[in-house]
Image (tube, rainbow, N blue to C red; front, top):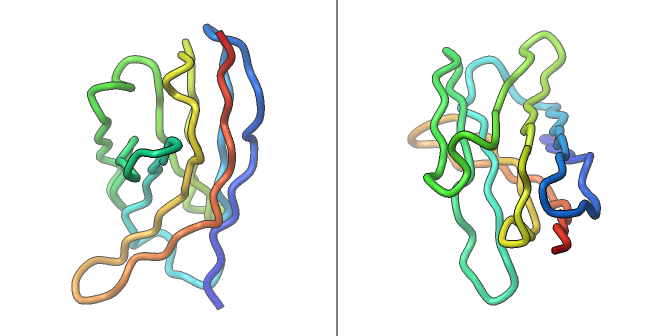
Length: 117
């Protein structure tokens, strides 16, 4: 059974930092591209950051220079270090596991991040 479980969300003031973690089980983690997505109220889910099995990272323009995605293949975890947080970063953040075509992605249940002004 595949599980992606996020942790580390919460409430923080603007300018502060949070670190999200996602623990994966039931998948060949080291072969997956892992990512973080977010969905704000009334908006579509959007990509935040991804990291490939080889460690190549990609970021949304809105978070470049502020967020850092990393992975630990020994622990089957992917993390998102979020710095200089802004109120517009407020959203539910979802962990994503992508095995690649033709297989479907896996998603975590989501975790709330709220940034107060």
